[in-house]
Image 1 (cartoon, rainbow, N blue to C red):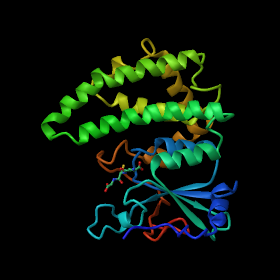
Image 2 (cartoon, rainbow, N blue to C red; image 1 turned 180 degrees about the horizontal axis):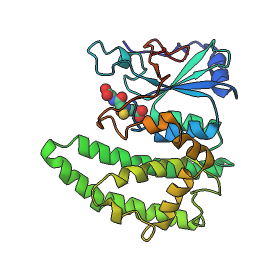
Image 3 (cartoon, rainbow, N blue to C red; image 1 turned 45 degrees about the horizontal axis):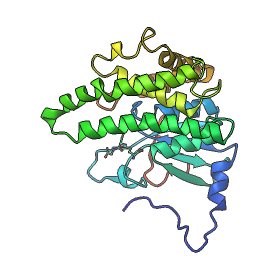
Length: 270
Ligand SMILES: N[C@@H](CCC(=O)N[C@@H](CS)C(=O)NCC(=O)O)C(=O)O
């Protein structure tokens, strides 16, 4: 059994759920590990929004009872829980790209009009595809082939992606943004990818101020955004490990846990 959504058949009225998602004063809780992992974009969007949000950790993701997993719609995390201001209603938003799109739309990170949104979504999709492609071919290879697969990507697909994205950024005036002159989901996603690429071997030659000034500028512009800088200064951000394979370190006080029942009140106190 997984956490299913309320039925929407027979013209069920979904306006209450939509109202929670659309309200300006909703609050949020994000169920994910105590790591950056695949949540850099989501947490940066929450930081940019200025909305009130809480981090929830799974109680024990690897436990045999699977209760953390089956409490989510797809047995994976992240899940974003959106709470009405009075706390009486909670709506779950699942799947990383869907969560990012929801937050980006809500907090004006998808451009000024349909054309800009289309551009931003194309840059985001191109960036996501690169990561999906690498992850798929590396994780689906037998152990002895993983290194080779990684090297193939680092010699072919990654440099091609870097070259093409650098050109788009230069065409927009080398101003630290893909579209217009404000931060968008495209900038956030590429900043996260740059962090990822930098963890790969020999990547220091691929992204640098000399070779890819426009990509570097995007990363610096995201990192220097006042609201994101403020987020990086928090106890919570500093407590996050790069990945879940990094050895655990102390968690900040006041972290809440997945209640494994839909987190209607924003999770369990520890
Ligand atoms: N399609 C999901 C995949 C998310 C995903 O793979 N999350 C990992 C953690 S980073 C997970 O929950 N894996 C399943 C497991 O560990 O059992 C998404 O894009 O959000």
